[in-house]
Amino acid sequence: MQVLTALLLATFALAGPSAAETIYVSNEQDNTVAVVDGASMTLSATIDVGRRPRGMALSVDGKELFVAEGDDNRIGVVDLAKRQVVGQLPSGTDPEFFVVHPDGKRLFVANENDNLVSVVDIAAAKIAGTVDVGVEPEGMAVSADGRYVACTSETTSMLHLIDAGTLELVDNLLVDTRPRAAAFSPDAKQLWVSSEIRGTVTVFDTATREQTGKIRFEVPGIRREGVQVVGIEMSRDGASAYVALGPANRVAEVDAKTLAVRRLYLVGQRPWHVALSDDQKRLISANGNSGDISFIDLENQEVVKSLPVGRGPWGVVIGP
Image 1 (spheres, helix red, strand yellow):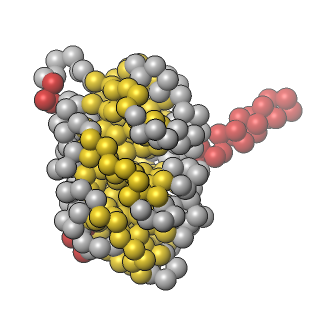
Image 2: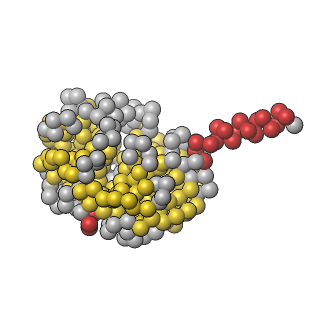
Image 3: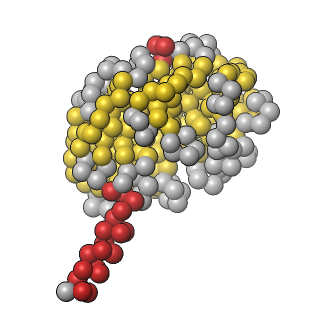
């Protein structure tokens, strides 16, 4: 009996970090952030935020959630313990997506209507600088070492590389039509960018800015124009990438070394963005048209549940 009890306690201890996770989903049409308990996979709360919430990110200490409130031209600050908005930050016009710099002091925000990236000083609650980029900037990424920030511009079909220290534009790279999301590999040696219209992901060498590969996605039974590539999430070990395929209603799992598509997961309607759990065993997709999120068990390679969360789920973040 003592041996069995010890085994059960060890099992619960190992499961603890995953069970404690909380999933946050921005509902673009409801002006809310849904709060989902990761252990029970149930909706536990809904937080009222500003108008048209889309991109989200956790503060470096994990105590606050920043939310891009596009129609209010600001970043809402949510206290996760209180589960309520406790402040706002300036963002520039129409913030859509943004990243928190690893130093925890700055946000880099894509201003879709102004063709700018705004740099927000969090402590001072002011815009500390701007960088001119292409037309309709949206996707943002920051390298783990904090050296570079990347931005996609949809209409210009470019990927812009910014020096995070000097705020100088390092390079402009032509990519496939209507780039949406960008992601650095964990070692910052690669930069991935999705193309919504072409249904591709292009991979660049960060140092040389040379294209090193391209992934084309095909879904049986779906015409090519129905495969529209949007959000990208890289695994912590750099071995895998997960890519939302929009109206194809699929999330692709990609071998990050060979760039081969390993498998496709059927999720809700029009997944926008995806997020990995801390233990890297589960993936969550935010499905904009079906108003739900899908839970993907990566070990067993199956979708285990869909959960309604609100109207127009767009962004998804997993935190403590």
